Image (cartoon, rainbow, N blue to C red; front, top):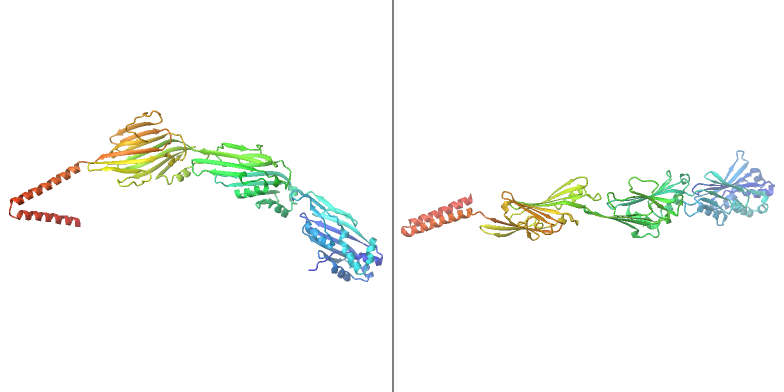
Length: 600
């Protein structure tokens, strides 16, 4: 597409021949808030003057269009009487760089117009200036007229004059000057005053980290902000910025540890990986380890802004219900206001290094530990462990305890009060004399089995840490309820036979033993241990088999032997074979009966 120019300078040529007063060349530049706009140069030429030059407007149009720079658009409009023509050339530009490029194309010389006073869009005022003037924009037309035979026009500067150079910013006149060598300039306050800075940090029990920075600006100037340039600058630090023109705020949302580290590494040249540390270990309900540390300086980032505040308001939310053992919170100045959901509020200077450090190492406390071995007839063993846990940093709950013990017990009961949880775990074992149904947890062994006597043994190692994996000096009470029918002869605890011990028999007074025996119910033995050490338990059972079944069997054998002896005696005394035949017949009948019974 052919680019055209709006220029009226041809009028000077006509003035040489008509002795007219000349025409005035004017320039109007309109800038938008973002630096884009349009520049127009215009002049009015009468039909009479053109005719005296033996030219027509059409011929003049053709002459100018043939030499117009590509950057411009040339146009001519006639007045209502069709006597005077207004010639204009204009060019549009997208920003100050494009403006300079277009003028360079028109004048064939570099252009030095400036727009912003600072490299940061947030700190900069609009500060426009240029050294070229309107005269520079029409030189190309003079040269075209000279080449066409109107050289005298360039020697008679009084035949034309450079009129007003008008510059508008956002439809407001900001500069007006006339003359050939004017150097236009104007200044518009445009710096975005940053009035308030707030930082919000949240760190939860699940290891999720989030950080938000909210920058609040003066609403008066914020509408002038070049959004494209603002986004370009902010993107150097993060892609998570959101600009709200209505509220005049910029919000940085960092919803993961990865995004937080990425921003800090770009906003703080001294940042290293260990400047941010977050650890939360509570894989079991019983122990909690927490460590949190931050150390960074955001001066590099905030140097991009015209800051009208001295402090950053800092709000921090850490996992609740934790009694932090070590809490170091630097710059403990009170924040301008508190924020719901954030336990800690402070403020520190924008130029200062922010430091904070929180640690906690806790475990639950346990008491009322009771371990019951209840063994009934037939070696049915119920092992019940009951204990009370006290709340620690909100780590305990009924659901969490049941989930933890799901694979550790056959039956789980949890009762809770305000700060305590009482847990009862039951494991059931049955021994059939051959193998233990849960041999990995308890061990039954048959030591002897004779006609009149059998001896069995039960061995196990009980360690409360299998159920409560913590170190504690809490006392533990063992209770053994053993049915009479099992024939308990020994109950050995850590090498000592409790059936022979009595309460207070240990000189260290850490153990006490009580033994009760009731013929109908059996043994009830209680032992109180001073700490949660590992316990080796062995029980020996001796039972005598009933003698009556053996007497009956012996009587039957005697009868059989007697019958055989008598029969043999009769056989020897009676030469007749009838006795033998009768005996054989009896045996056959017995065999037949046995076969029939077996078949039935």
